[in-house]
Amino acid sequence: MFIMPTGCALTRTEFVKRLREVISSFGINSSLYSGHSLRIGAASTVAKAGLPIYLIKILGRWSSETYRRYISVSSSTISNAFVLMSKI
Image 1 (tube, rainbow, N blue to C red):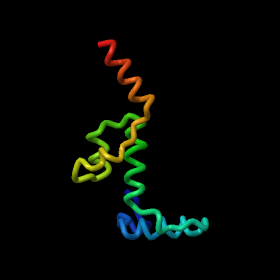
Image 2 (spheres, helix red, strand yellow):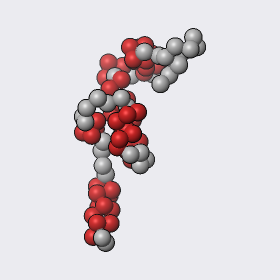
Image 3 (cartoon, rainbow, N blue to C red):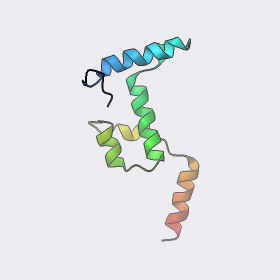
């Protein structure tokens, strides 16, 4: 959560507006980016870092199990899981 200088939380609308302003300042088409894009990226990043699934859902304020679709798992992670399972 981002806090404004006034102490109020930054709203989703204001965050996306500011994000698009920054993206546009680099000459990039800001309409290609949204708050949802960041939520997807954040879910994937923290999953890769090892954050438990239930915390990803809570911290990302996901109200459904949809966030699981966005968590990418590399082929090496899957291979390592098979190796670990074969040792059980």
